[in-house]
Image 1 (tube, rainbow, N blue to C red):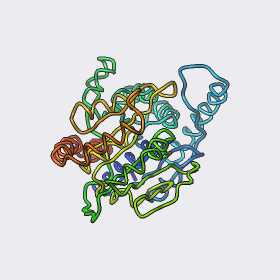
Image 2 (image 1 turned 90 degrees about the vertical axis):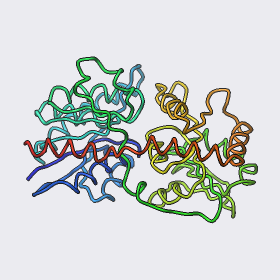
Image 3 (image 1 turned 90 degrees about the horizontal axis):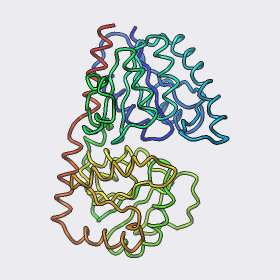
Length: 358
């Protein structure tokens, strides 16, 4: 029996693309095989993975930081514990190969797989690689695996010695986003702040809502656990988290507003004009801004960032798009072009080839 391990987590952006690859891989594997997932023992990882029908093993996980704080010392021991827990899991489950979708939780399993000489394959969703991917890429190199990137330009951020091991695959997106038709009788605007929501986006929408409702019914994912006292109306539908309905709501939406993490590739697959408000400041390395500017350069998005983020500018931007069907059409076409590559199939094919060699 061939055993394929997956790892990644912390946010939906690190989990759902991995599940897309797992789903595609299941279509092609022949003979007896088993899939399982190593993720964070706390947070949303377990519930999402098990809902997809994949066995889940939780390990301690700590955030990787480039600066020192009290949490750095605490998280160091969590990472250390996660490494030994991953060794135990990979050995006991007899994993033949490991695919990582990134996030800080993925580093200990990738390090453990490298120690056990299990081939490591890793994927980076952002325009520039984060620290987790930089570490995991080394494990992939040591074990004869591959490094996948969503953006072609991402290759230049890696050392030249790694370039022959990098495959530009695009971003894995679940099939349901590609294979649905969801016409809407009303004009809708979808607001997403990522799987955890975003306070900045929420505040902008709250201030702009009366003006936005002149054009659209606003469907708003506010984020689970966030305080949100704005009541639902005929033209405003707030939800802490949108799960199974998301592909259908997105397909029906005329415009999507939100952050610019890995989820924007789902918007691209659905061919949506985007208004992107990237996460900036000391809590980020600037990856969302880089992602957003790529989509803006491709004419798929309008980026609101820095001094250009206030409720009036948001209203003006939405109003302009609402009144310009030709501009929306061109943005939608550009968005669809970015999302046309089926990364799940590309990655699954390469994993399948490796599995058949073992």
